[in-house]
Length: 636
Image 1 (spheres, helix red, strand yellow):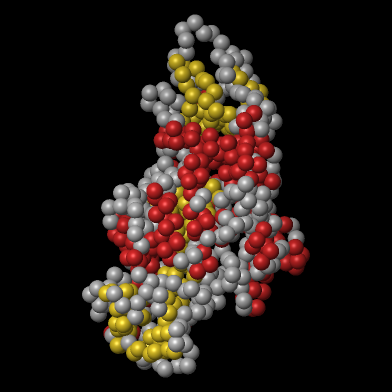
Image 2 (cartoon, rainbow, N blue to C red; image 1 turned 30 degrees about the vertical axis):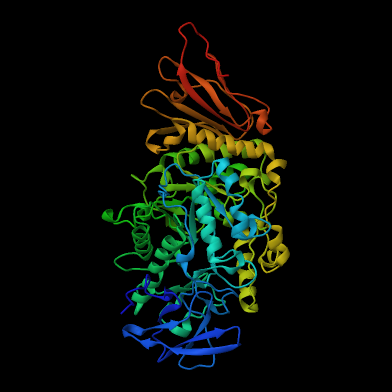
């Protein structure tokens, strides 16, 4: 039975001054000791825990905050970190450290939390966002992010992982914030500072696999993983097999822990399609439910990455869904890349980048809702009727997609300036929830490569070969040629090249202003901020041009005209969506071709004879009352 003073069923918790209570699930052990390190005297002390039912061991020891300890199984000469360690000061192979979360003084008691609608998400990798690569340094930049219009930070995984640098998706100590970025209280201070500025913070969590290096779970139990039923990242986690109850408890507790002890505003669940679970309640739904309970009156948002595009993830449990709030929409990204670059190799081969794809994305979210998907040779996706527009998180950059270019190039270097500005406008004014990747808002030129400081030679080689196999089709090279061309993931120089140069905010002022102005327009305009795909329709105007119309009950309509090609004359202009409401005319609200952004100041012009669309531009128009004596309509 769990100690009455404990907050969580596993891990080490300070319960009263210098009293720390331990509880570990170790069904593989006959006996379990806590090995306490006394740094001052270079001595160790052994404390035997009491066996409970179902493979748990527990006990209270007279030690306090900052004490380092390990666990010993069956008097083995080897000692191991706590599977639910709260901090690993020397990394996953070192000792665990006692932490007391109640010592941190929060200032966000009035923070209400988040709802997904209306948010602008900003994906951040702490190790490369600043030159220092720490939570403290990143916190100093939050004021500027809030000023630009960002509302939510999506922090890439921070659970302890091996090596000096990495993306964080090979975490092995899921309760321990990485020592590479600072202390647990540094992370708390980051979140507290964000909340003071009106910014939410959600955490990217990896519940589909454990990293291979520094993972000692097998010492305590053979039931964490299901051997022989793996995917590309390793063995699957045992969420529905024999002895899966404590495993599920481990992950549900982890979700509660991040919400309660670090005040995160929700999660982005990585690669949920790689999670195998046939339980009555899907583990991600269970984690989400536990996280919402932990948040209490504070609202949190839960977003899934799901390559199968299963719409049920955002439907309520009462309708057989998993109760999440949103899903990443890779379809939008892939269409955008094909439209901007003409590159339709690899997984882009199932996209045309033509106008109808963007109209469909605005109206229906996912493009694939059960049709044939040749790249995977599957029927991909499920129908999305009734799923709100804001549930679809759209982007033209994220950590995966930039790195999957092989050279880590952002899309703006693969297309024209005008086309990139137009696509940015579509992203930030569309009905979905937009996501920006760090540095995108000011046109960062530093690449974002795949980097992972892996010590194990076999893991390192397997990682390099796996990356080469994935990227060879995109580079039109053989796997061996790709291996030679790609930077080695464990090369410190590759990691260093990915660090942002924040001074580029001034160097690339035009692109920075473009993003700031668009985010302001999205937030302040009475119609664009509504989102809602139900009031949106669209029409193809040409091979690379289209219009989205945002209807309003009071005739406060908006048009977003997007043209990815050269200037186009519409004659005839036989598209009813271009007609303003009766008694109104169209007026230019904003254009991506403004000189402020490096454009030529071309505008949409409408006359009784024809419409003229500027080349490689997006133009937002609003309906205004027509003066009674005006006969010609000129959008200026």
